[in-house]
Length: 307
Image 1: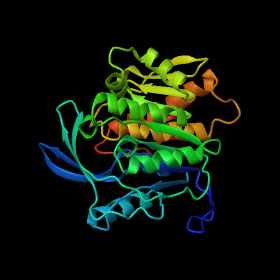
Image 2: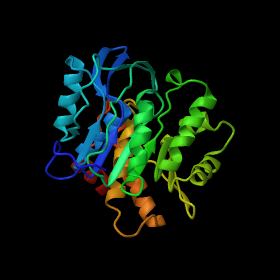
Image 3: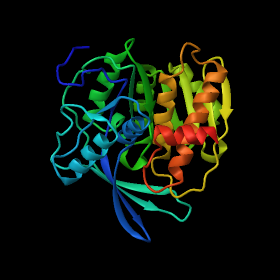
Image 4: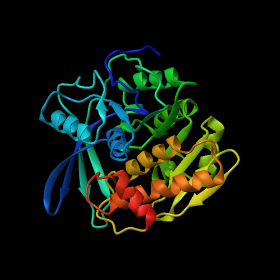
């Protein structure tokens, strides 16, 4: 990967590639706008956890784009060069149901100029719309190919059916991505959409057979399934009163990535996976307890783990 003079004095531990947008949340109390987008949420969550992270994205040079940039910078996230490339920042309109769950409609164009990573971060993360919607999806796949053997690659498909073509087309794109990854994290609902009729354990085994090294499938209050070729275990969820579920999965992913960075020399041993899964579940629990994509700080996460 080519070097670049444009970035921070220290290489970033994590580079996230993917969409950033504005969530327009409609509820009985009125409309509120939040910076969002799954990859941007993951980068923001990493920054809140004191992980040196950068985001390569595509936002507009408009008021909403400025709000996203300010939001990320407030958490210490580096907005990588070339990210302010669109005329108009994308939006996702979320409607909140009585149980706190959210449904979305999108107004988004996803395009990235041909880019090379400036250096190999320890972890490269991507996911969601950015890996399915062309023309940007092809650029993202190219970045994952560059990262092979140099960075750990983590991936969350974060399925948005309204933005995808046929099920077969989406499944094919997803299965082209999996062999380029070291870790796949998905929700149970994503797993059932991609592989209807398969139980989650079989889906995890299928992902491993495709070439990823760790499959993580989160199941809300039922906990999270974590599987390697040698281990399969379920980590219990951390109970929480639910304000809404916006950003809960992304918060889980941020803490999962932090755990992978900090796991030391014990690899994917069962005790390591249990601890990483518990930390990620705690982060998600804190997030669902308050409105919007509002992940915990490192201090809040440590306090939650100490309880």
